[in-house]
Length: 469
Image 1 (cartoon, one colour):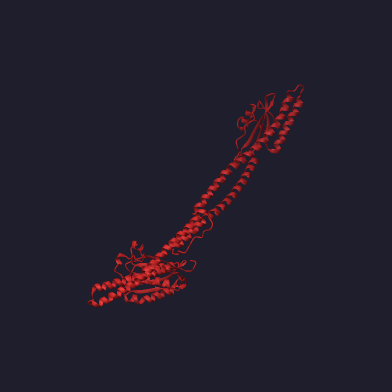
Image 2: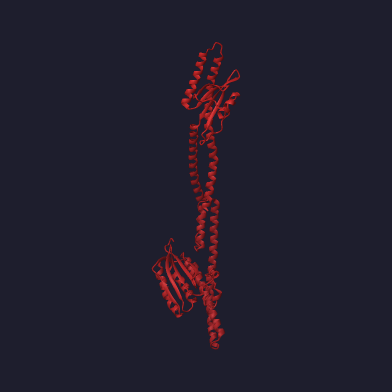
C-alpha cells in the first residue's frame, strides 16, 4: 500500500512545485530582459539628446561646418566608447537612412530584419516595441530604437543592437537557483511524504500483522492502539473488541466440545458395558450385537478424539530446541512393527537437525501422519520418512504409495470429520489430522499435503528452526 500511496504523493507535490517554479522562472527571465531594455532605453535617450544637439547646431544661424563637425565627432566618440566598453552596436541614422554616427564603422542600416523594423517604427515617432522574450538557449540580439525629435518632427533615429549573452547567463543563473530550490523543496517534500505515509500506514501494518497472527492460531494477539490517524485508532480498538468476542466464542465452543465429550463418555461406557452383558445372553457370533459393539467403540473413539482436539486447541505449546531427526527416527522405529505386520516397509532418512518445537505435540502429529500412511498403503509397498532443512524451517516428509487423493480431496484433507468417500470403511474418526494441525499450529508449525509420484500421498510436517523463524 505504501508503494502505491508514496508515488501518488510525490507526483502531486512535484506538480505543485512545477506549477510554482515554471511561472517563477518565466518571471525571472522577463525581469532580467526588462532590466536590460530599460538600460538600453536610457542609453538611447542620452544618444538622442546628443544627436538632437548636432541637428540643432547644423540649422542654427551662424553655425559653421567646423562646429558641426566637432559635434558629430563628439557623438561618434561617445558611440565608439560605448561599443568598446559594452560591445553593443550603436548608431544614429537620419530619416534618409544615412548614418550620422555609428559604431562600429562597418555597421550600416540593413534593408530587412529586426533592426530595420525597429528603425521604421521609431521613424514614425514611436519607440520600438519591446522585443520578444529571449531564452537562455536562443542566440538573439535585443534591438531598441528611439526617435530624435526636434520641433515635433523626427529628424533622426538612435538604434542599439545589443548582444544577449550576459543577460542569458543571468537568466540561466537565476533558473539554476530556482532549480536548486525546487530540488531542495522536493527532497523535503519526499521526506515529509515518507514520514506521513509511515505515520498513516503504521497502524495498518500492525493491524495486518495481528490479523495474520490470529489467522495462524495466535488468538491472544492484539493491536496496540498508538499513533496514526484517529480513524485508524478507532479501527484498532474495534478490531481488538472483535478479536475478544471471537476468542470468547471459540473458547465457549472448545469448552462445549470438551464438556460434551467428557460428559458423554461415562454414559457411553455404561452403555457399552450393558451391551457386553447382553451379548452373554445371546448366541455366540451374533452379527447384530457385534455390529452394535463396533459402532459403540467407534463412538467412544470419536468422543476421545473430540476431547483431544479441544485440549489441543486450548493448550499452550511447550516449545524448545528439539532434535527433529532423532524424534522422527524414534517414531519410525515405534511404527516399524505395525508396518511389518501389514507387509509394509517403513524406512526413514533422519539426519540430526534441530528445530523449535514441542516434542510431545510433534510426536503426536508424526504418529497421526505415519498411522495414516501405514493404514492406506497396500501390502508390499513402502512408506518413506525423511527429515531435511529448508531455509528457516525443518521438514519431516512422509510419503506413501497408497491410492492417494484427487486435487479436490487434497483441498479438504485435514478438515474435521472429513474422509474420502473411497475410505469410509477404513477405521478412523476423521479427526487425527485436525488434531495434528492444531498441535503444530500452537508452536508455529504447519501441515501440508501433496501428490506422490507415481501414486500415493505426501504429507509435510514443517516446524521453525529457531524461535524467531
